[in-house]
Image (cartoon, rainbow, N blue to C red; front, side):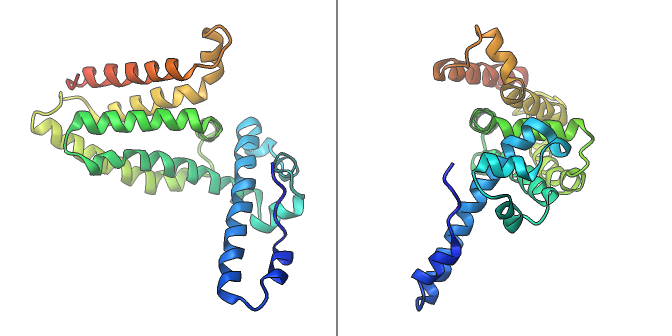
Length: 225
């Protein structure tokens, strides 16, 4: 990890340049926050909220512990920030619902995006799984508002497809739960998949094949294959 940049030293170098200095400080802050968030995501995924400490996070991020508290006042604030960021990316993966009128194209794009996120960000997925298994103590409000509103809006779209005869009459909520479970399995149970794969992570070719199989099975199951 790259050590956090010293904002005070940067300030002195940019004295007399208010606009440039403000933009520079904002860029430094964003870079530092991202460095801490990446470390915290891994530590929380490995140890859970209770088991993780800011000292561990600072060590993984290669920064002083005080810097973690400078950017995030409490461990809980840091944890909540990561949880919501993980889920926000999952919700963004469903942008296909807004970019096409073809159910097969929409669901394919959503499933592929979700699987790609599991491959790119497995710690975030595992962290989310730990949080839900432990009763969603810190995320219940976010799930019952932001996530539920998002899910309900997608269900309305799918009910419209069913009414128009574009898709088999399956329960949309069940379909979405299946997509959640299957796509996130490649992160949450990644170690198990490695063991089944002769103790090797899936190659790019194997993952591409897995992604295509998941898409094909789900689309065929709802009459779109």
